[in-house]
Image (cartoon, rainbow, N blue to C red; front, side, top):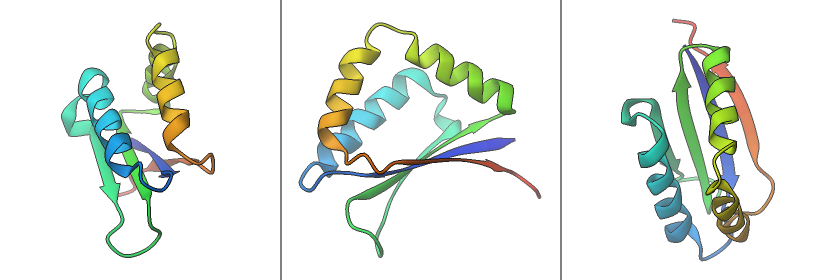
Length: 97
C-alpha cells in the first residue's frame, strides 16, 4: 500500500471554505476509508494535509489521470486556486510494516 500525502497552505480566512470543498470532492471521488484530511492543532497555521491510500503506484497514477480528465475539474481548479497559496507538496509514502 502507498499513501499520497499532499500538504497545502490555505490562504488566511479561507480554511472553512477550502475544507468544505475538499471534503465534498472526496465524497464524490474517493472511498471514505482511503481518505484523510488533517488540520494542524499545533504548528503551521492554515495548513492542511490530505492523504489518500492506494494499492500501488499504478492505482495512484490511474486515479489522478482519471480525476483530471473529467470536465468539472476546471471549475474545481479555479475555486481551489483562489483558496490556497501555491507552496504545495506532494509525497508518496510506502507502508513498511
